[in-house]
Length: 290
Length: 264
Image 1 (cartoon, each protein chain N blue to C red):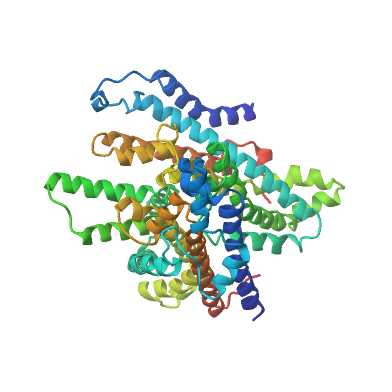
Image 2 (cartoon, rainbow over the protein chains, first blue to last red):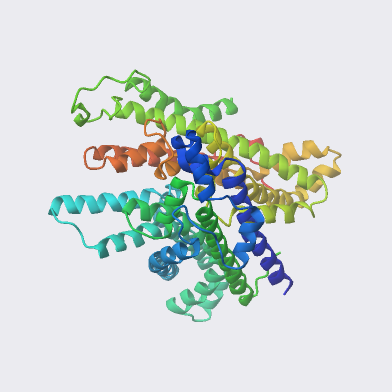
């Protein structure tokens, strides 16, 4: 109970802290209108007109707006909440499919990795080391290669499949690498030797250590959500797909303050939910955080 | 003699890359290109030799990454040391709170926000932003490791011998933490190398920058006309990765002197 309250407090602190830090960065340090207008900001009339149309909100205005679900308006005058909901609606199936792939990869590793297998985690380590924008580059290269060789545009479904694979690659590599290491260590443990000696078969042993793996690997899940969000920022703009990542890229390029704050809040909230879910899973396995 | 061997092993790959950069004209002035001459293989759109530029990019990215990583390593170790010297009760909640805030949002988004917000030399802004943002999580890891080591019998024995706090830390605790620190800093170094390329994806960098991440980005953009750029950039990443992994591996077995391998 104490751990749950503590984790909840840190999660709330994480959300509000991220919002405050993002607000400080995007609106206190530079003049937002100058950042948004760029070279045109030298025109004083334009700068004044822009500031009148887009009045900068105070920190408390953004915070109170957040508490009642009003995240402000984009530079185009659209409500940020609606823009975010639309973008999340487009990205959610991709993220869901990626999480499904990641879980599948983790279970497959737990079921089939050999005790002395090293190539798997060595390869996974290298893939996890690569920057998150490499996977969509390779996906785009594959699409271009096929389109040039066949002379025909590929259907949208192929772009979606490539996007899901590009999203999953980095996080999946990290997860598989950790799952392989933990499973191999568990396979060499006294516990596994004991249950094998007691007559447990291959699948019984593997399913039993899958539980251990779930308890141990669940903290990585929180990092994976951050990793998936980071991958979205690259995969969608690079592959030319709409969604949360493309919206974030647009917000950054246009210095759209309210939109950037909204994006920060959405990601921070997702991470907080994952953090609490992980805590629940670990407590179910009898592991309490110190 | 052993320390000299260590220095030679660590310095050899960067020296070889520097020699390759010189051999392929990475430091030479770009050649002037006539119309359509960018179609030449191994000469990029700025008139630079691809191999020379790539070798130089690897070298500069490594140097930049090492500079940030060293700064983070020193600062985080000092902070963890200060925290562990006194009462730790304040340090852990503060670090946990800072980590909760920073880890709530992807690092790249933070850095991109800083890069669009803060006006100043982009290189310094991104380097400082990256360093500041990775500092709390790294300090938290190091603090945990120092706290674990400090409770071990060989450290307690050193205190009983009357050694000062600083000497125990420098002579026993820090060297014993090396096997944990090296993989952590290898990861930091990998991210530090990639960060310029990552912010370039958002349209913030310059394509003429000599940087491994930017090279990778250009490889993607020119995949149809110059596919070798992407392939070479990925190979270069592979080389950097192997070098870092080799350093991490050697830190546990081999080239580091015995007094840096205190086995608790």
